[in-house]
Length: 269
Ligand SMILES: [Zn+2]
Image (cartoon, rainbow, N blue to C red; front, top):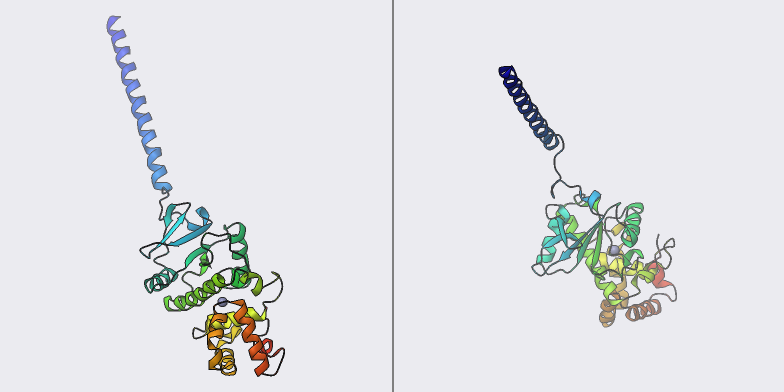
């Protein structure tokens, strides 16, 4: 009887041991399944668009681009063509802030994203498309790019586009009403002022020649204005409204009267 009890006790202890071991193996194997079946998210593997509505790429003191949202480093665009073009221009001393937009962008940035996609535009500074961006920290040096096009252009082509946009940031800095002066109503056409400022932004760059016709219009304008008006012309190119009105009046008086300037720089959709 005593021997039997001892045996039963041994069996119970042994059985308990097996159960514990089995439980441990089961627990371990479920961890293994979780790790191997579904990779844990890392900074690199996390989809940019899903987690972050908008990239703000600040120009830091050492001229490198960082991508952050609310101060948290979440990725980089340095290995994209846009990022390489940005690095080139920053090294030359250009000053602008890239903001990468996506379909997750909200508020003003979401509105700009929708407009860029609808009108098939690769980049904007905001005011040059009629958006008042003065509420943003980067104003007036913001340049917005939809996330889908970062590698759509070559590095060289991006440098041209960014140079064009950088000229708009300077225009915006010299005219706080640039957005309204470019496009008074969001569904209306762009103005003659916009056509002129765009032609200047594109002069010698020609990323929008089919719309802005800089190669035809700017030489004609300069020829009619003449050397004595070049200082006023330069100020007008930088966005200055008073200088702009001056060159409109000078051009009209020299080139066939009221409406001549508007004929050279017609409003456009
Ligand atoms: Zn432009």
